[in-house]
Amino acid sequence: MVPLSWYIMLSAVVFSIGVIGFLTRRNLIIVFISVELMLNAANISLVAFSHYLQSIKGQIMVFFIITVAAAEAAIGLAILIAFYRNNPTIKVDEINLLKG
Image (cartoon, rainbow, N blue to C red; front, side, top):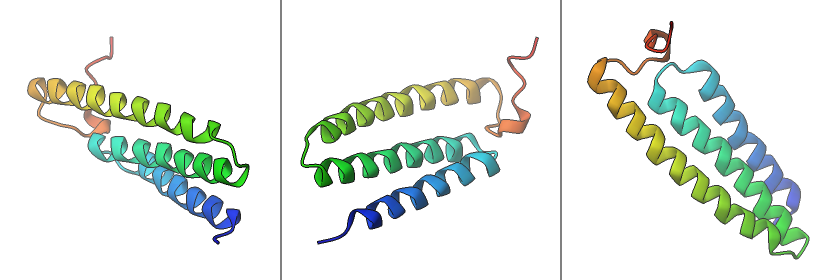
């Protein structure tokens, strides 16, 4: 059986990759992927703790997080496509549409 610490380490590595991708990349699609990585890292740790504590509550929470992640991806990509039609760039540094 795999110990709990391995799952937590995997979750920390995946979350760290997501944070690094979010902070360093300037492409909005990569930023969305990095946010998804961070949400999946939280899912890994919730499922691991749920299995370790013999409780179903963590696994139920994972379904809610997956639902929120799917809605975030759908709405985020729809906003991205609508923005790209007006301005042919998806780089975060070049987006100044909302400035007053």
